[in-house]
Length: 322
Image (cartoon, rainbow, N blue to C red; front, side, top):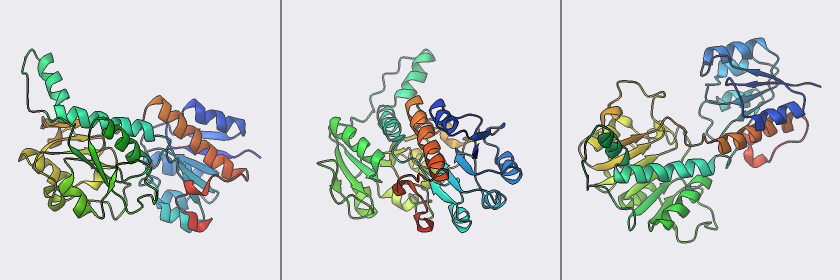
């Protein structure tokens, strides 16, 4: 029996395509990248068995309009663009590919940390403009304390790299592993304990109702003066207006942001004019190696479910309907 799989993007890495072809799946792609309207139209008009979800919103209306839908897999980890509650009501399992992009995202976090601490992009732009401004206000990371908000696979990789740079590491996560996988990382009991000790704060949490706006003005003020904020998680976790103010008034030394509240970043965003911000367009997990692992994992998730070889339950986002 041939199954129909909808990829909510114009293409999928060959590693994922190979899995779908192996099972003889009929594959539908988006013509227009990032078009939620086209995705909803396809969901309502095609006998789709499974969706491999990229960044396009998969709304309750789109899910409800597709009675043949059986399974969704996120091409990645964060499922904030999928209405998981609507999928659950319809009996549709939602999977993710945890760990597939952990190395790439962790490396991006470290890269942003160094670039923001030493103001590398600002000096690069100045030099290309013909100036020789030898700025000497960069922060040395060796000896600083890195606070990790979230201590899953990405946070653990960042911790190991930070320790190699000579940083102390403290982490807060309600699901902190009983057996700490990174020796030397201190466990913080709560966010209020973590923030005042974090010379650098790196975010590694999913976007949920509980984390949306978590770092508001009051919590940003609890960071030490001159702290650095790194966000490779979700932009909506931070109150962007409060962040901009903290960067402008000097409470924060700098920030490295791979994700923002609104994406793509609007042309008039104040973040663009701030010299103490390093910006990248949400590509932390988008190296060829990570894209291959995410595509393969997502394809294996949906085809495994459809062919009676269910994936590891640990990949399931809504296991209560299993």
